Each structure stands twice: as C-alpha cells, then as structure tokens.
Amino acid sequence: MLARGIHRTVVGFLCVALVLGGVGGAVVHASLTAGAGKGALCLGLALFAAIWPLAWMATIRIAWPLRELAAVAEQLRSGRLSSREDLQGGPGEVGQVSLALGGLADRVARQLRDQRSLMAAVSHELRSPLGRARVLIEMGREGSAPPTLHDDLQAEIDALDHLGGDLLAAARSSWPGCPRRR
Image (tube, rainbow, N blue to C red):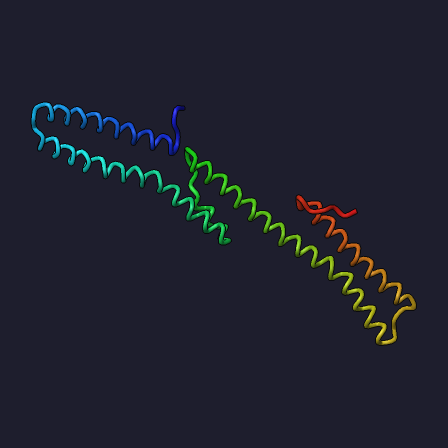
C-alpha cells in the first residue's frame, strides 16, 4: 500500500491540486501567447478561488480526526475514563493512536478497580488483629484478662507488623525502579 491514513488524504489533495495547476497553467500559457493579458489575470484569480476552498477542505479533513482524538485524550487526562468509548478506530495513524489510547485507558481502569479491591482486602486484614487487640485491652481494663495478656497483645502487634511488611514487599516488587528490601 503506497499511502494510508493521513498520507492518503494529503497525496489525494496534492494530486487534485497538481491536475488543477497543470490545467490552469496550460490555459494561462495559451491565453498569454494569444495576447489576452486580462483574460489570463481573470483565469488566475478564478483558479485561485477554486483551489483555496479545496485547500481549506483538505486542512479540515486532515485536522478533524486529530482534533477529536485530542479532545478525548484531554478528557482521559482529566480522569473521565468513560470517554474512551468516544474513541473511533479506523485505518491509518489516527485509528492506531485511538486504539492504543483506548487500550491504555482500559488498563488504567482495570488497575484502579484492582487497587480498590486490594484496599478493601487490606482493610479487612488490618481490622482483624486490631479488633482482637481491642478485646484484649478491654478485658485488661475490666480485670478479666487472661494471664497471657501481654503475650497475646505482642502476638497481635507482630501480626500487624508482618502484614505491613508483606504489603510493603508486594508494593516494592510491583513498582519498577523501586529499591528492593534487603
């Protein structure tokens, strides 16, 4: 395939402009050699008036998908991940960027969902030893604590410390570039 996407649009408009320029040049040359100077000026203005809208349409045709892509990218940047549904794939470079941006937004949404799930699990795991420690402290205040109160509290504190260490190790192993715990 010789040209695709934006290149195909540019090449198409350049070919049309080349044909119009060639035909216009031949007509202008013929009219100048015939001695009709005013006619050549009018013809040149007419060709300019015909080519100007063509160039304007080419610019709009090329820039429109890029503007739409930039608008969706700005919405994604501001946190509205649902705007990824507005991305339109298709042939060419803009379609490839749209698909890549949509995949990136899907990955970010998946990571946010996984992060929420992890936070819920961590919260639950932290509450269990804390709840047991609270019960032991209340029992100590009431005077009904078992003789192993201090050892039991130390075990709960150790469990919390171990859980915190596991979470920190997991976080460091999943973040590229973070120093590893020794």
